[in-house]
Structures are given as structure tokens and as C-alpha cells.
Length: 139
Image (tube, rainbow, N blue to C red; front, side, top):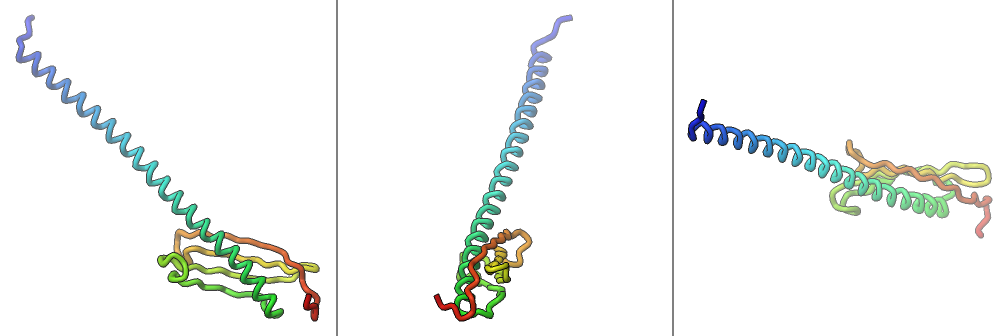
């Protein structure tokens, strides 16, 4: 049985077409995996940026609570709403400040949410204890 040149060319073309389809399928699969990894990395970086900002807001809340308590001995709690214009212009924040007695000290507990009210947000809580000045002690 002898094959002619037309049959051989047709088989070669068919093989090349299958090879090209396989290579394209592999390339698309690899591109899909790369795209998923890039999206995952982008979301992680966004979350990290939110956590950093919430951490800074919590530290500011601690400082605000200590300063307010120094001026007003009856100051015990506050929900500090920070508009977006005062931050990055895109997101507002909420910082809850609570001061409670703890033995001879005061416990300042702060919870910061950034962005406030968003489904995807970061929440950071910080607690510090500060000396409780005796009444009438102005030192």
C-alpha cells in the first residue's frame, strides 16, 4: 500500500492543527493561573493597606482618649467619626474609644474600622493602661 503526497500533506496539516490547539490551550491555562495569582496578590495588598490605616487610626484614638481624659476626668467613651475628606478622600473611618478603671490605672480600649461601614474593611483594636491620677492631683 503506497500513500500519495496529498494524503501525507493532509495528515501533516491535521497534526499541526492539533499541536497548535494544544499549545494554545496550555498557554491560556497558564495565563489564567497567572491572572488569578495577580488578582489574589492585589486583594492581599489592598487588605494590608486597610489594616495599616486602621492601625494608625487606633493609635490616634488612644492618643485622643488620653488627651480628652486629661482635660475631662468624666470622659469615658466616644465614637469618633472621621469623614473621608480628612483621610484619603475616598473612605471614612470610625474609631470607638472606651476608658475603664483597672485597679490603680485606667484602661484605654480603642477599636478602629476602616473604611467605616464597608463590607470589606479592616478592624484593629488596641488597649493600653495609663496611671489613674488621684482626684485633685495636678502633677
